[in-house]
Length: 194
Image (tube, rainbow, N blue to C red; front, side, top):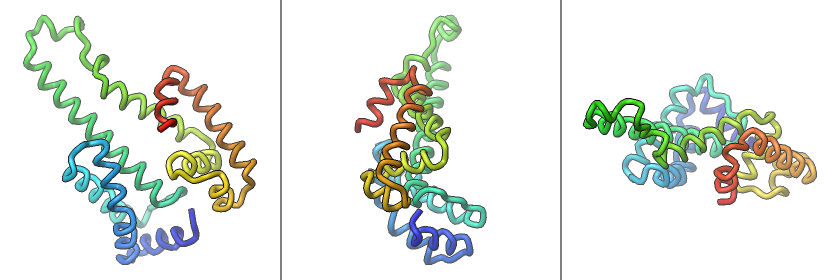
Protein backbone atom coordinates (compact mmCIF):
# COMPACT_ATOMS: atom_id res chain seq x y z
CA UNK A 1 0.00 0.00 0.00
CA UNK A 2 1.28 3.47 -0.88
CA UNK A 3 2.42 5.81 1.88
CA UNK A 4 -0.47 8.20 1.15
CA UNK A 5 -3.03 5.41 1.42
CA UNK A 6 -1.47 4.22 4.67
CA UNK A 7 -1.96 7.72 6.08
CA UNK A 8 -5.57 7.83 4.87
CA UNK A 9 -6.32 4.48 6.53
CA UNK A 10 -4.68 5.67 9.76
CA UNK A 11 -6.73 8.89 9.68
CA UNK A 12 -9.88 6.88 8.99
CA UNK A 13 -9.13 4.70 12.02
CA UNK A 14 -9.03 7.79 14.21
CA UNK A 15 -12.43 8.91 12.94
CA UNK A 16 -11.28 11.60 10.53
CA UNK A 17 -14.31 12.34 8.35
CA UNK A 18 -12.17 13.98 5.67
CA UNK A 19 -10.34 10.68 5.13
CA UNK A 20 -13.70 8.93 4.77
CA UNK A 21 -14.87 11.60 2.30
CA UNK A 22 -11.62 11.24 0.34
CA UNK A 23 -12.16 7.48 0.00
CA UNK A 24 -15.77 8.03 -1.02
CA UNK A 25 -14.96 10.71 -3.61
CA UNK A 26 -12.01 8.82 -5.07
CA UNK A 27 -13.57 5.36 -5.43
CA UNK A 28 -17.36 5.69 -5.56
CA UNK A 29 -17.83 6.06 -9.34
CA UNK A 30 -15.57 3.14 -10.26
CA UNK A 31 -17.13 0.90 -7.62
CA UNK A 32 -20.63 1.72 -8.90
CA UNK A 33 -19.54 0.82 -12.42
CA UNK A 34 -18.15 -2.53 -11.22
CA UNK A 35 -21.23 -3.29 -9.11
CA UNK A 36 -23.54 -2.43 -11.98
CA UNK A 37 -21.65 -4.92 -14.12
CA UNK A 38 -22.71 -7.62 -11.68
CA UNK A 39 -26.24 -6.66 -10.69
CA UNK A 40 -27.32 -4.81 -13.87
CA UNK A 41 -29.24 -2.22 -11.86
CA UNK A 42 -27.75 1.23 -11.28
CA UNK A 43 -29.76 2.03 -8.14
CA UNK A 44 -28.93 -1.34 -6.58
CA UNK A 45 -25.26 -0.92 -7.55
CA UNK A 46 -25.15 2.49 -5.85
CA UNK A 47 -26.82 1.02 -2.76
CA UNK A 48 -24.28 -1.81 -2.55
CA UNK A 49 -21.36 0.59 -2.99
CA UNK A 50 -22.76 3.02 -0.44
CA UNK A 51 -23.21 0.19 2.06
CA UNK A 52 -19.69 -1.08 1.40
CA UNK A 53 -18.04 2.30 1.90
CA UNK A 54 -20.18 3.01 4.98
CA UNK A 55 -19.11 -0.37 6.38
CA UNK A 56 -15.52 0.96 6.29
CA UNK A 57 -16.61 3.72 8.64
CA UNK A 58 -18.37 1.25 10.92
CA UNK A 59 -15.29 -0.98 11.27
CA UNK A 60 -12.72 1.81 11.04
CA UNK A 61 -11.18 1.18 14.46
CA UNK A 62 -10.30 -2.43 13.63
CA UNK A 63 -9.65 -1.92 9.91
CA UNK A 64 -6.60 -3.74 8.50
CA UNK A 65 -5.87 -3.26 4.80
CA UNK A 66 -2.78 -4.94 3.33
CA UNK A 67 -3.56 -4.12 -0.32
CA UNK A 68 -4.51 -0.79 -1.87
CA UNK A 69 -7.77 0.78 -0.70
CA UNK A 70 -9.14 0.37 -4.23
CA UNK A 71 -8.34 -3.38 -4.28
CA UNK A 72 -9.87 -3.79 -0.85
CA UNK A 73 -13.06 -1.99 -1.88
CA UNK A 74 -13.27 -3.77 -5.25
CA UNK A 75 -13.11 -7.14 -3.54
CA UNK A 76 -15.66 -6.07 -0.92
CA UNK A 77 -18.09 -4.77 -3.57
CA UNK A 78 -17.62 -7.87 -5.71
CA UNK A 79 -18.31 -10.12 -2.71
CA UNK A 80 -21.44 -8.15 -1.79
CA UNK A 81 -22.70 -8.35 -5.37
CA UNK A 82 -22.10 -12.09 -5.51
CA UNK A 83 -23.82 -12.54 -2.16
CA UNK A 84 -26.78 -10.51 -3.42
CA UNK A 85 -27.00 -12.52 -6.66
CA UNK A 86 -26.78 -15.81 -4.76
CA UNK A 87 -29.50 -14.66 -2.39
CA UNK A 88 -31.77 -13.60 -5.25
CA UNK A 89 -31.13 -16.84 -7.07
CA UNK A 90 -31.99 -18.87 -3.95
CA UNK A 91 -35.21 -16.89 -3.51
CA UNK A 92 -36.21 -17.68 -7.10
CA UNK A 93 -35.33 -21.34 -6.63
CA UNK A 94 -37.45 -21.56 -3.47
CA UNK A 95 -40.36 -19.78 -5.17
CA UNK A 96 -40.05 -22.03 -8.22
CA UNK A 97 -39.85 -25.24 -6.20
CA UNK A 98 -42.94 -24.28 -4.18
CA UNK A 99 -44.91 -24.06 -7.44
CA UNK A 100 -43.82 -27.50 -8.62
CA UNK A 101 -45.86 -30.67 -7.95
CA UNK A 102 -44.49 -32.83 -5.12
CA UNK A 103 -43.54 -35.68 -7.38
CA UNK A 104 -41.17 -33.48 -9.37
CA UNK A 105 -39.52 -31.69 -6.44
CA UNK A 106 -37.80 -34.73 -4.96
CA UNK A 107 -34.36 -35.87 -6.13
CA UNK A 108 -35.53 -36.47 -9.71
CA UNK A 109 -34.61 -32.92 -10.64
CA UNK A 110 -31.72 -30.79 -9.43
CA UNK A 111 -32.29 -27.19 -10.43
CA UNK A 112 -29.21 -25.62 -8.85
CA UNK A 113 -26.66 -27.77 -10.68
CA UNK A 114 -27.97 -26.77 -14.08
CA UNK A 115 -28.28 -23.01 -13.45
CA UNK A 116 -25.51 -21.32 -15.46
CA UNK A 117 -25.25 -18.20 -13.28
CA UNK A 118 -25.02 -20.29 -10.13
CA UNK A 119 -22.30 -22.44 -11.67
CA UNK A 120 -20.37 -19.38 -12.84
CA UNK A 121 -20.63 -17.69 -9.44
CA UNK A 122 -19.54 -20.88 -7.69
CA UNK A 123 -16.48 -21.07 -9.92
CA UNK A 124 -15.65 -17.42 -9.36
CA UNK A 125 -15.92 -17.88 -5.59
CA UNK A 126 -13.59 -20.88 -5.80
CA UNK A 127 -11.08 -18.76 -7.72
CA UNK A 128 -11.14 -16.02 -5.06
CA UNK A 129 -10.81 -18.59 -2.27
CA UNK A 130 -7.77 -20.05 -4.03
CA UNK A 131 -6.25 -16.58 -4.49
CA UNK A 132 -6.69 -15.95 -0.76
CA UNK A 133 -4.59 -19.08 -0.08
CA UNK A 134 -1.55 -17.58 -1.84
CA UNK A 135 1.33 -16.45 0.39
CA UNK A 136 0.99 -12.76 1.34
CA UNK A 137 3.74 -11.32 -0.89
CA UNK A 138 2.71 -13.50 -3.82
CA UNK A 139 -0.95 -12.49 -3.41
CA UNK A 140 -0.05 -8.79 -3.20
CA UNK A 141 1.90 -9.00 -6.46
CA UNK A 142 -0.85 -11.06 -8.12
CA UNK A 143 -3.60 -8.64 -6.99
CA UNK A 144 -1.69 -5.65 -8.32
CA UNK A 145 -1.12 -7.37 -11.66
CA UNK A 146 -4.55 -8.90 -12.22
CA UNK A 147 -6.97 -6.71 -10.27
CA UNK A 148 -5.28 -3.30 -10.40
CA UNK A 149 -3.93 -3.78 -13.94
CA UNK A 150 -0.43 -2.65 -13.03
CA UNK A 151 2.60 -3.56 -15.14
CA UNK A 152 5.49 -5.59 -13.76
CA UNK A 153 7.59 -2.41 -13.67
CA UNK A 154 4.93 -0.49 -11.71
CA UNK A 155 4.60 -3.34 -9.20
CA UNK A 156 8.37 -3.54 -8.90
CA UNK A 157 8.66 0.16 -8.08
CA UNK A 158 5.66 0.19 -5.74
CA UNK A 159 6.79 -2.81 -3.69
CA UNK A 160 10.53 -2.14 -3.92
CA UNK A 161 11.31 -5.50 -5.50
CA UNK A 162 12.92 -6.42 -8.82
CA UNK A 163 10.92 -7.09 -11.98
CA UNK A 164 12.28 -10.65 -11.91
CA UNK A 165 10.83 -11.10 -8.41
CA UNK A 166 7.49 -9.84 -9.69
CA UNK A 167 7.64 -12.36 -12.54
CA UNK A 168 8.59 -15.08 -10.07
CA UNK A 169 5.55 -14.33 -7.89
CA UNK A 170 3.19 -14.22 -10.87
CA UNK A 171 4.56 -17.52 -12.17
CA UNK A 172 4.18 -19.15 -8.74
CA UNK A 173 0.67 -17.74 -8.31
CA UNK A 174 -0.49 -19.05 -11.68
CA UNK A 175 1.12 -22.43 -11.04
CA UNK A 176 -0.55 -22.68 -7.62
CA UNK A 177 -3.92 -21.61 -9.02
CA UNK A 178 -3.66 -24.09 -11.87
CA UNK A 179 -3.09 -26.92 -9.39
CA UNK A 180 -5.67 -25.67 -6.91
CA UNK A 181 -8.33 -25.09 -9.55
CA UNK A 182 -7.66 -27.85 -12.04
CA UNK A 183 -11.36 -28.74 -12.21
CA UNK A 184 -12.18 -25.09 -12.95
CA UNK A 185 -9.31 -24.56 -15.38
CA UNK A 186 -11.47 -23.35 -18.24
CA UNK A 187 -13.23 -20.82 -16.01
CA UNK A 188 -9.83 -19.70 -14.69
CA UNK A 189 -8.50 -19.14 -18.20
CA UNK A 190 -11.58 -17.14 -19.15
CA UNK A 191 -11.50 -15.18 -15.88
CA UNK A 192 -7.91 -14.00 -16.21
CA UNK A 193 -7.87 -13.47 -19.97
CA UNK A 194 -10.38 -10.61 -19.73
